[in-house]
Image (tube, rainbow, N blue to C red; front, side):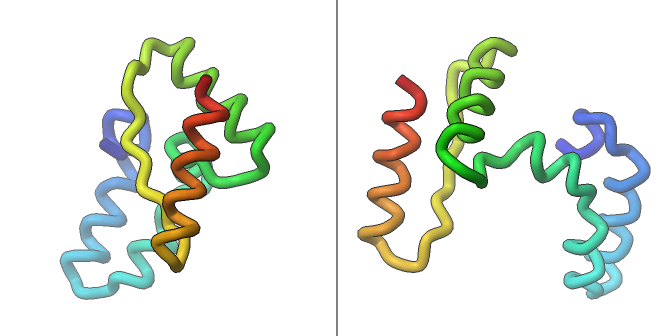
Length: 86
C-alpha cells in the first residue's frame, strides 16, 4: 500500500528495518504525510473533511479500526465516525 501511495523509498526502508527486527525504527520511518493521508485521527471537523475527501475520491468503504482503550469508547468512536460520514 505504501508503494501505491507514492512512498516507494519509505516502503523499502520500512520493510528492511522490520525484517531486521527493528520494529520501532520501522514505525518511526513511516512518513507523517502517509499517516495523515490514510488516518482519521484528529478533531471532528478535520475527520469530517477527510471522510468527505475520501468520498469525493471515489471511496465507497472505509475500513476503520478504533484504537480506544475500552470497548465502550471504541463503540462511541465508531458511532461518531458514522455521524461525521452522514
